[in-house]
Length: 225
Image 1: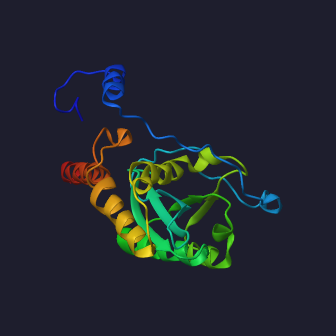
Image 2: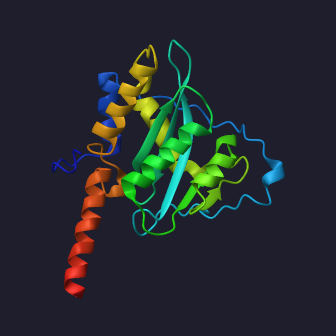
Image 3: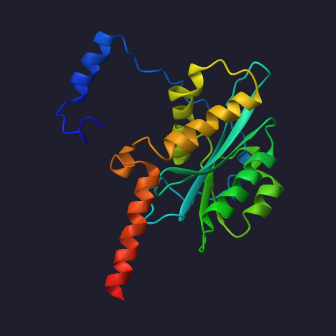
C-alpha cells in the first residue's frame, strides 16, 4: 500500500519500524496430519496438482473447514474459494462438524456464481467431503482431492483460514455463535473480498481483480466483434 502511494520502502525497513513500535507478527501453528483414508487412495484423484493459477474465474474452486473457538463451544467455518482471484465466493458457519455446512456453502456458491461450465472443486480428504450428500451435490463437478498427509495441494484455502484467525478472530474473546457469525461476515464481506489487497491480484482486492478481468473480456469481445 505504501508503494501504491508512491513511497519507496523495503521490507527490511518496515521490519525495523515495526520493532521500534513494538509490533510483532502473529505466530502460526504448524500443520498436523490428521486425515486417515488409506482405503480411498486409489479412487481419490488429485486433479489440481498444485496448479493454483487458472486462466479465468469459476474454473477451479477449493474448499476447507476450520474450527472457531467460542466460550459456548466450537463452531465450524466452511469456505469455498475461487482460485482465479482467491475470492471467498461462499461460506457457512455451523454449530456442527458435519456435511450439512459444506452442502449449504456449495449451494450458495452455485447460486452466486452460476458457473456455466464444468468446475473442478478441490478439497482435502475430510469425512465431510467423502459423504454421500457431498458426492450428490458435486455430481456435475470434477472432484479433486489432496494427497494423504499433503497439505500443500489445498494451501490457498488453508492459508485463508489461518489469515482470518490471525488478522481478526484471534483478537476477540468470542462469546457465542452469533458473535462469531458477525465477525466472520465483517471480515469476509466487508474487508477480505472488497478492501484487503492481495499479492496474487497484483495488490488489488479480489473484487477489483475480478472486475478488471470482466472489463478486459468485454473489450476483447468488442474488438473481436
